[in-house]
Length: 90
Image (cartoon, rainbow, N blue to C red):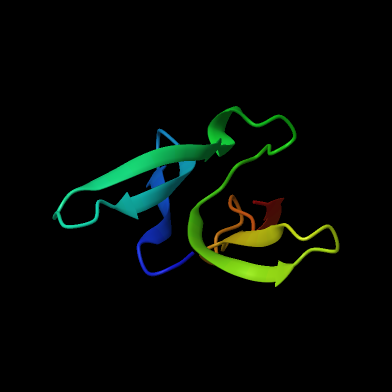
């Protein structure tokens, strides 16, 4: 997001599919970081089935000025998984 703020995916897969997106901030003058939950996709209605989210990137600015964020999963060439592109506004 800038020189000291990042988007981070925390995920689980297999028997416990979970995806959370955090904002991580470097504490100035320290080796510590803080993280703030931005989205818990595990509990977001309409994201069924939630699959193997593996990537995240910033997309274009939206018309209202917010930053778009795109998350992606792939199907791993498996008939039981899906490829997903998820678009969010930050």
